[in-house]
Image (cartoon, rainbow, N blue to C red; front, side, top):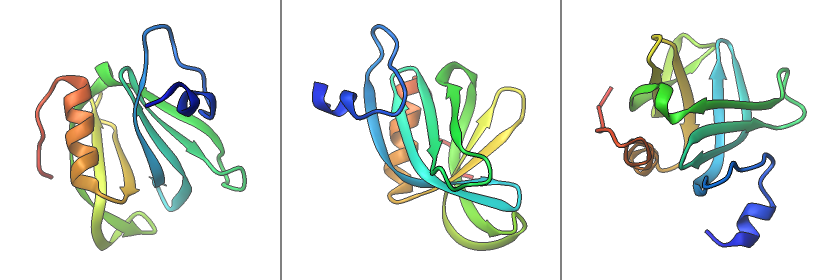
Length: 122
């Protein structure tokens, strides 16, 4: 990524941290699906929701807290499976975060590579 890409980030990068990937995404938060953008850096995964979501503002997870990342289904109201186009990020404490993304396989591979771990199908 160029330095110009860093200038448009909606959050600051730490010293030595760099942007790996970004793209439009929806984060499933229970029954709410929040639209926004997902960013992968060399240190963390950051979801920045659109201002009109019920809960806006960044949600970030340090890569060190991620236990596994794999495929998941998008669910209506957080329950009814609709489409297999999501990624599931399981944290070390058992919390599972779900993001609807385009190109989920490449997202899974990029996250796994950034955290130095393997890819797990879900």
